[in-house]
Length: 118
Image 1 (tube, helix red, strand yellow):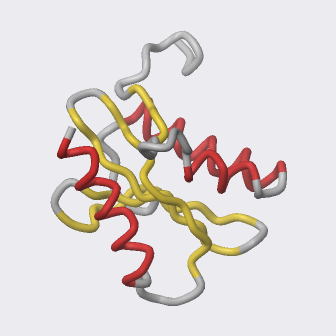
Image 2: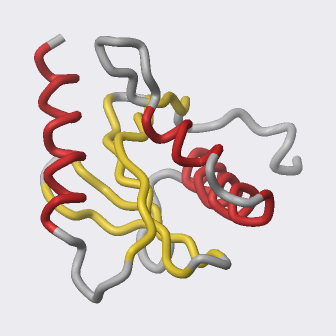
Image 3: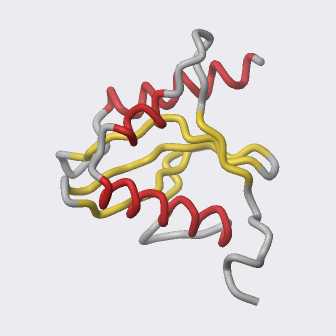
């Protein structure tokens, strides 16, 4: 059975703010077609192959993972959480330094905390 016929292990959703915005979707729309495709393929690989590890997926801390993609803009990261059979994309950015910048990590943490309040 090929990948298209298998059922995904995880459903994928975008984090949505109280105002109805989807920051990761908006960020993805700002990227070029090739980069969108690369990130989309990597998210799909995680969706169908969960749980995965390096080099594609890395656990950052309790409840928070990153999907790692190499794009024309450099190294991109999509930070996400998994709740039961759902992957929720919390934050996306182009990584410019060796370590994940605290501001990027804090954005994902804040969005995760918003989800946990619901």
